[in-house]
Image 1 (cartoon, rainbow, N blue to C red):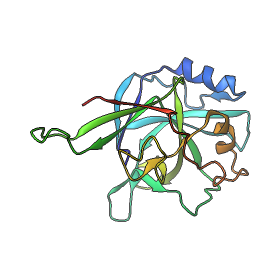
Image 2 (image 1 turned 90 degrees about the horizontal axis):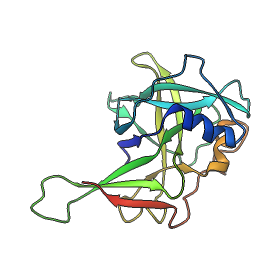
Image 3 (image 1 turned 90 degrees about the vertical axis):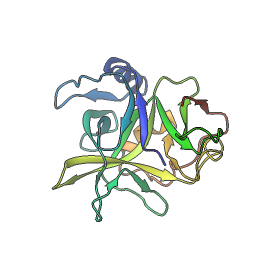
Image 4 (image 1 turned 60 degrees about the vertical axis):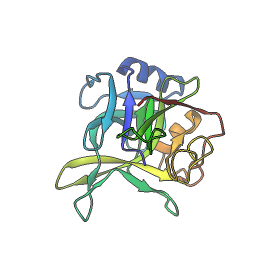
Amino acid sequence: MCNDYRLMVDVASIVEDFAELKIKIRFGEGTPNLEAREDIKITDIGPIVRTIDGARDEAELVQRRWSWPGQNKRPVYNFRSEGREFNSNRCLIIADGFYEFTDPKDPKKKRKDKWLFTKKDEPIFCIAGIWRETPEVGQAFTMLTMEPGPDIAPYHDRQIIILERKAWANWLDPNFSAKSLIKPLPAGTLVVEQVG
């Protein structure tokens, strides 16, 4: 399951991508200094976009912690989507790549093989997420998961939900059915590269 993702693009590029979809990005907490990062890991801070009072044409970009403590105190960084609607606290997790790990092909290799997934012909993509407030860590987000699509199935038995660009505004709208947006991408949408 996804426990490591990447974001190498700057705030201006993110704002531009959302503007193309007629979504104005606001910075209620000030414009964040997003440094390019190869690895954003569980409990790290990452940028998310969430609705402002349910408006479809504007949203805020804030930085929050990835994962909140679960009942057993282990981090909740992935959350199953099956059978749920998510009528509140939806967010878009901005990324330009994510990683999956498999047992090494080379039996002498100690570490797992690391695979980078990027979206073909798109500089960034959004992962469906939810956020919540907890007494332990304040506001934090988690990535929603589903059965794997054709590009991910050879590498893992679950996958994060990558939303089509045209669905970003609908995901932020709590009146829009989450179940209708949760589906695998068509085969060949993701580019896979071994990076470790």
